[in-house]
Structures are given as structure tokens and as C-alpha cells.
Image (tube, rainbow, N blue to C red):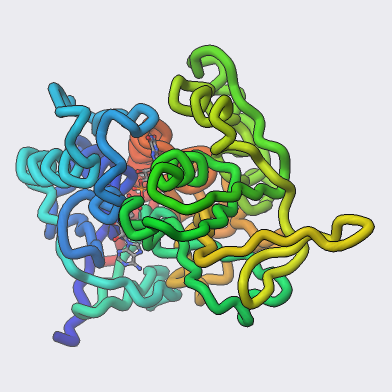
Length: 361
Ligand SMILES: Cc1cc2nc3c(=O)[nH]c(=O)nc-3n(C[C@H](O)[C@H](O)[C@H](O)COP(=O)(O)OP(=O)(O)OC[C@H]3O[C@@H](n4cnc5c(N)ncnc54)[C@H](O)[C@@H]3O)c2cc1C
């Protein structure tokens, strides 16, 4: 199919951020297919949640906010969050008739004709007046580079490919990363593994007490300030700290969460620190990189939105360099609650822009 469709708004991504945006478009009178489309390259509803490992049960996630207009109620905490969210998003898309097109991969967005943006996909092209980008981070796992990495004879994998602890039975596992994923992996793997080692760049900061609204607002403000300056957003845990729950307390007491500084190099059979008087070594069969994700924005490269600092300068959800473009679920809105609010704000802004500049006849 090579036809180019004309439309008012394209939403890329049908995770929390994209569905929240689609809901607000619908509420403000935009009709699906006629005025807007939602494109998503994953096979099923659920956004990135559909890919999360089965042992990440709904009870283990940190507080998932419902999408606007339809609560997620009575979810079984023992069920995998992937299943819970997939079923909930599926119900949601039907209830609000959002008509998500999937699997449709957006390959690039570039300047089109007549002040429009050209969205090129695996299923034809869209010529749109505005764009809501809600592509999350799951598709861009971040792997830091360390000397000797390519010489390692064991297995290396990233959180994005973690499928549960059983496959680490009897293995010596080094887990890299001080975020929520790293600590969850360690607590799950330790009972199966022959040995685990935890390394992080910075000493982890554990947060006592509840993460209340005040703390949430302060964290969001920190990330907001960075993206306003055009800097890449920081990881969530760097601003929120790790919640000190019972499982973490137990892990600290048992020594499973005995954090070591980052190693200096990787060797064919493990990792090594430059300790004096001689290097210290830990042998390993597996290195598990729980080192986070980066915004999946490669398809926007032709628009040259990136600043010298490496991020996209934002004012709220709007790209400062191009008011037709909103990034939802990016930086300060990269949480389920943030994505909800950002979807509403982006749609309000787009509505204003479209009203100010009626389409050329
Ligand atoms: C392990 C883990 C646990 C988390 N737990 C929590 C939690 O408990 N609470 C919380 O608030 N947040 C949590 N988060 C953060 C969470 O991911 C976000 O809050 C939220 O779910 C992200 O929604 P999103 O819509 O921005 O992205 P996603 O859910 O990633 O959705 C993006 C969608 O865009 C699609 N897409 C990407 N690129 C393209 C393209 N080029 N073309 C077409 N489609 C594309 C993808 O297929 C995907 O469906 C967690 C994150 C991780 C990694």
C-alpha cells in the first residue's frame, strides 16, 4: 500500500502515553480514522507491558495508574502484569473505539509538503498536521560499554530479554545496575543461582517511607528542568531513589543486595576490579545488564530536533523547535501518571494550534 493519507494528528505508540492522548483527542471531538490515527508496531495491546517478564506480577509493580476514563479494578496481584495490562488496554481501546492500527512500524517522520509532516510506515504514509510521539523506551535498551566486554565467554543479556529466574539455575551471575529492575532481578535470581554479585556505578539510595505526592512532584520537577534545557532525561531512580520495602530489607539483611562498585573490566570468565595491591576478580557465567532504557526516537532523526546537549528541548510536552510535535511519556512524563497528564496537555495544545492555523484549502 503506497497511498498517502491526510490527517490532523498521528499518535505513534499505543502504550499508556499514546492511549491517554487518543482518549483526549476523542473527547475533544477528533474522530478516529478521519481526524487521527494511532500506530503501534507491537503485535498486541499493552504497550511495553506486554513484553515484561512473567515473574513481574501486578503486585510487584510500583503503582500503575489507570488510564483516563476507565479504572483498572480488582486486578489479581499474583497475575503477571503483562497479562493484566494487555487485557485492560484491550478493553480500553474497544470501549473508546480508538482503532489502534497494529502492527504498523513508523520508520521515519520528516518534513512533508504544505507545512505538514510525512510519517512513513510499514503500511503506507501519513501526511499530518500534528504529531504525538509516545514511543516509550522499551525498544531502546541501554548497554554501557566496558573494556573486555567482547571477550566474555559467558552469556550477556539485558533486562529487556529477562524471562524469569529459572534459566540462571546453578549459574554465577553478575547483575549490573542500581534501579528497580536490577534489585528485582537479584532478589529473584539469588535462590536459583550458584552466586550473585551486584555492581552499580553509584551507591544506591534507598528511600524510607512512602513516595507521596510531594516527593513525586519534586522528582518530576528535576527531570522537567533537564528537558527544558535540552538535556537528555535522567533515569527515574536517579531522582526517586529505591523504595525500601520488605523484600529489599530482606535482601540487604541476607547479603543479596551487597552492592559493589562498578568493575573496571570484563575478562573471558568474569569481571575484575583494579584493587590494590592486586586486581580482585569474580568469576561469572552470566552478566545481566539492568542498565535501563533510552527514549526510542530514532524515527524522528530527519527532523533534527536534538540539541547539542543530546536531548530535545521541551516546553511542557511540546518540542520547542517544532510546535507541531509533542513528546508524551518522555522525560518528566515517563511514568503512568505522568503519561496520563501529558496526553491531556498535548491534545489541548494541538487543538489550539489546529484552530489557529486552519488547514490550507
Ligand atoms: C520493568 C519496568 C517496570 C515499570 N514499572 C512501572 C510502574 O510500576 N509504574 C509506572 O508508573 N511506571 C513504570 N514503568 C515505566 C513505564 O514503562 C511507563 O510509566 C509507561 O508504561 C510507559 O508508557 P509509554 O506509553 O510511554 O511507553 P510504552 O508502554 O513503551 O509504549 C510505547 C509503544 O510505542 C510503540 N512503538 C515504539 N516505537 C515505535 C515505532 N517506531 N513505530 C510504531 N510503534 C512504536 C511500542 O510498540 C509500544 O507499544 C516501568 C518501566 C519498566 C521498564
